[in-house]
Length: 216
Length: 93
Image (cartoon, rainbow over all chains, first blue to last red; front, side):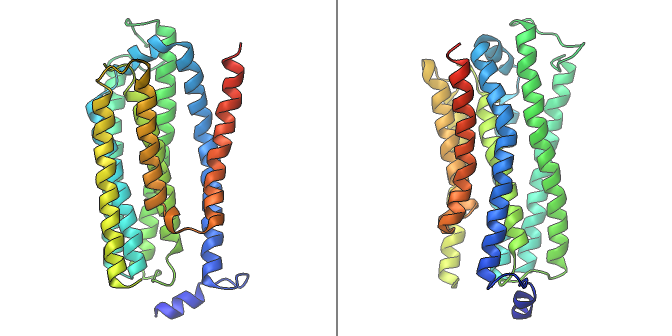
């Protein structure tokens, strides 16, 4: 069965399965390069404004919940582990393990988004959402508002990527359920893994830059 | 992959996961210590080590072809251009 799938999945323009896998991998990394630059725009804006208003950024960063931020970082890293184990299970031909690890990744992703939602709710109550209701007394409110605009833009786009990732996980678990993958062909699971880990890497930088400024 | 190599592979994933958790707690802890101007560089250095671990082990660059590594590196090189050229303007005004 595995052999039939492996052969059937080989598109006619490729010489062999290895070449086909590499084409997919290069395509995915190219997409991730555009994603790096997409998030890069916000990171560069962050660098420029943080260098312009360091005190306001430090004062504003103090209003983020460092405990929830650290827990969420751990949750996301855990989801990367379960994702890599899902790819590993696919590679080993363990359909059940693959579905269970994809489900675990989905659950951890949803926990991350829920904690993020609780944090957003706190910011609304504390009048820290930029706009007419914004109030800030620890530093120049106009400069602190820039920090919170970047905070919501960056974590919001990150969360949006996770929602898309969650949808892709459900789709991939369904395909695994239908027995579409085998040790000879599991490229879609591996590409989903690349996407999910990339989103993890973005958070690895967002966490210290947003939560950990001027804490000492 | 034989079962021995597979077991070693899975063990590596758990070790990397452990290292990432330790580094996360380290970066949060270090943030409360006053290192003067070094706080941000240290936080970024830890983030880069974590990102490298994820890319090398979880994103399988360790077992990737040279061409795949070039593609992965290209995104980072463009990002560096983006940052360096922007800052060469802002920092010299």
